[in-house]
Amino acid sequence: MARTVFSGAKVFDGTGADPYPADVVIEDERIVAVGPAGAVDADAAVDVGGKTLLPGFFDTHVHVTVSTPDIWAFAQQPFSYQFFDAARNLRNTLATGITTVRDAGGADLGVRKAVEDGLIEGSRMQISLTMLSQTGGHGDGWLPLGESFRLTHPGVPDAIVDGPEEMRRKVRELHRMGADVVKVATSGGVLSMTDDPRHAHFRPDELEMLVAEAAAAGMFVMAHAQGADGIKNAIRAGIRSIEHGIFLDDEAIEMMLEHGTWLVPTLVAPQGVLDAAAAGAPLPPAVLDKARSVVDIHKDAFRRAVEAGVRIAMGTDSGVVPHGRNLRELELMVAGGMTAAAALGATTRSAAELMGLDGELGTIEPGKLADLVVLEGDPYDVTGLAERISAVWKEGRQVVGA
Picture 1 (cartoon, rainbow, N blue to C red):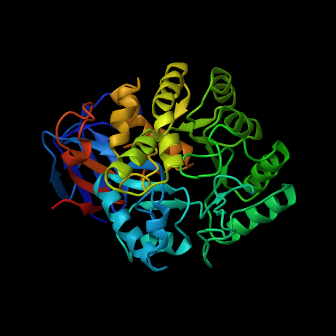
Picture 2: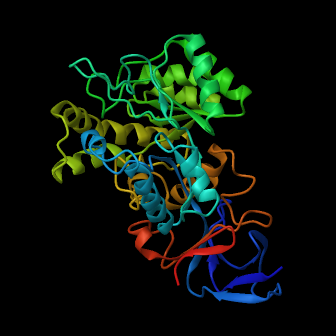
Picture 3: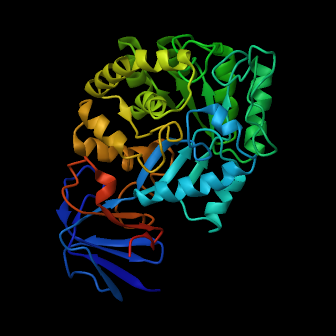
């Protein structure tokens, strides 16, 4: 088995230490040693002198089958187009050093397996298939003309559920169809036209059933939760992560600290909606009004969560914003009060922990999978980070760079 040494770099290992000079040795798909230069023999060498070596990045909230917030543009594409779009989006995401993603709705088991089997090059995936929604909720595509727009097909089930027993059956169906994680909307949202982001969706008995059934199947639950009441209901039910958290209040923050609940802020998403409209996407006025109204509220909620010490993992809602620009989120996280080291931690070790993958990924340590990012310049300058990535390795194989 060949051993390869990465020599001459500083290593940001994701453990909380500042970058330090070290060689990193990999054997097949694993890291086998991290230590002083020249201390470990190897069969081959990769010169990364003057650069920084980091763990492969994570994005814990993407939609790889979607490339626009304009749902009508999506609806006018042939059915199979979304899968080829996913292949492109996964390649573009991998090119930014993001070797692992959590798809928050859209990708099915076939997309995940295509990556696993090497049919397409892309970030490894956890998938949720869809977002569970109550009737009239954020995921209900009901239209005033009496029809419904629902993104279902044989690999993605209908997502509308009402009542604990329907919730029990739906979670079991998701597990049968290959979901790794369950996503639920516990509040309204920005992109849906008929609900308010501040309103809570699902009752406590429904959410308790959801968490219990997911846990029985070995799955975590992530909650699209923007309004304070929907956030608190999700926390009380034992949901693992709050996605967006736009209207976080002080009580919700205290509850997150008490329960160890994660926040995935997706700061780029509301501005991304406005940017898409400015570029010509014909988004409904109601959607744009909501997006405009939450941008500053969202930033303030994130700042207070950071100050309080809430556990945070990086996620972008890419699909609403362009894939391949994911690392822009780190800039907004730093602008919102995180240190650069903490922001990098949020896209490496913390994200791995959120997804239950910290035994294999998230840090540069012996025994971990060899997902590595080679970065030019100062890693604590997160501005334009993606443009400074010169190479990416996934499970010991170079997937980006010459």
